[in-house]
View 1 (tube, one colour):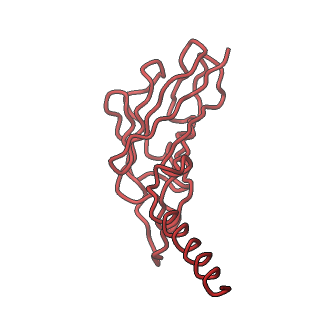
View 2: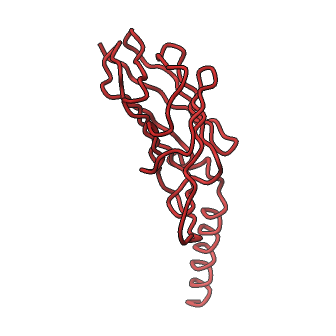
Length: 162
């Protein structure tokens, strides 16, 4: 009898573990998501620092792929060019930055040195500093921003205050 009860308990635990392991990432709202903030967040402020946090699967603590793009709200004031030195990804300078209409296409820093092979969920910050001369919308409110990364569209929003 005890053996039968143990088999049921262990079997159930294994089934639950397998189901949790097999569930798609979309079930966890913290994986493959983005958030954004500007500082200062006051309406009309210029220049501002834009920080976008991207949560997803990281390889050795870095975003994989070659680029990440930020589709910015139409109301955000954006210069025609942004220097690569004005943008960091995970604390490292971007390789290049291209302004295409309302989008910043950021070429990710090329990793150097010894590479690891660790893949784990985590968060990487993309920071567009004040030297890029971005400007907040002139009216308070929430403004949509979309992160384009690994063939995914990750929605975020900027909160602008009075």
